[in-house]
Image 1 (cartoon, rainbow, N blue to C red):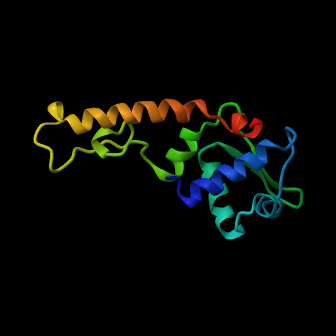
Image 2: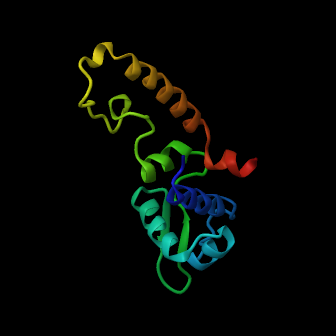
Length: 137
């Protein structure tokens, strides 16, 4: 399940993706139009900026804009940024791997092998969903 933070991040990215290229949007506008509480939005935008998905401009005419193309930002990118591993178990994870403490032999663990398959299918699906494809639906 998506965390509320990930959902808000996606809503903010979707709002920015619907703006004309080069338009800088104030935090208040994103908050109001995307129905995201401003106190959460500010932290989310900072996290998105650190991940080089959005950029910002300071000052009176400042705000946020997409730094990376809406065709390149995937659901997997945003999910990993805010919710971490896509895998259901740490031993099945690509980026957040940890061995299970109760597993006797990882190489023969049927649960691990099955959940690696689930992770691969989920990851493939999430990588095929871009911000642009969500906006166009």
